[in-house]
Length: 85
Image 1 (spheres, rainbow, N blue to C red):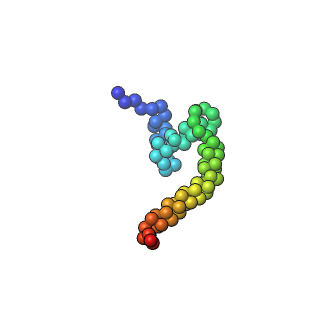
Image 2 (tube, rainbow, N blue to C red):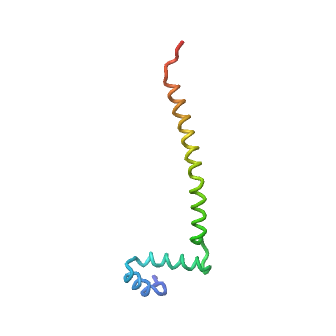
Image 3 (cartoon, one colour):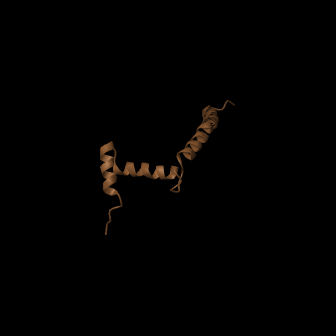
């Protein structure tokens, strides 16, 4: 048996009026509840802090990858050269 969630008609009506899907509106509503402490989950501020941390460490990670790739390709090039006896 399939039951309609509470306020489904209201959500659909509002979503249509503001030009989004009902699921998008529900997602925004759940996020607003999290922001106000009414629902468990990650708040926008927590997510921003997490992304800033990742962003700050991205150049270090990229440099590490480039160093390893450079070493790999340098070794590959040395392995391809004929041995001079």
